Amino acid sequence: MRNYLIKTPVLLKAIYNRCIWHIKDNANSVYLTFDDGPHPTITPFVLDELKRFNAKATFFCIGKNVEQYPEIFQRILDEGHSVGNHTFNHVNGWKSNNFHYFKNIGKAGQLIKSNIFRPPYGRITYAQAIGIEKLFPKMKIIMWDVLSGDFDVNLSPQQCLNNVTQTTQPGSIVVFHDSDKAWQRLEYTLPHFLDFCKQQQWNFKKINL
Image 1 (cartoon, rainbow, N blue to C red):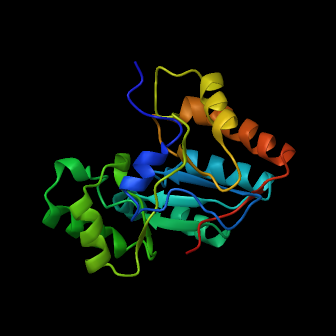
Image 2 (tube, rainbow, N blue to C red):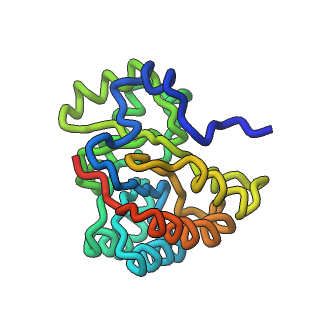
């Protein structure tokens, strides 16, 4: 049984109202985001597909991956996309003490110059959200409106595509992953989803707060 929600419920958005779940002020735009890169082969695939559709997106990068693949990280920037902090080691906030969590965000921030942050797995405590506001006052926590499920190995590529085409609306922040685990579903879903959005006459914008 699936243990995650494709469409973020309104109640959860209200409880974690310090976080940004969707973008209100662009009625005809969607916001594609990619977590866990950069990856040596998958991120270039994503960038090539985005270029094909003249699309901009936001990449929430893991610090150690940026350290390992700096040239791919630079390509993301050179092609006009946004980047965000996703911790240095993909730290689960629910399983980490606050000192370690904030330190890991700061370490990633030495490589990823950005004022947006996404907690790995979307798992962050209320106290950690408040702590980020105090320690990193310019940083905004970006969550999502639509979760593709591309990380789910039990999901078919077509089911993954259905997840995003059936739930995305203008203003949605949509999550994909440029990672090995997601590859089988991402390779199929991303081109089809980009084409679907184009048919809806939606723009693809990066998160730029």
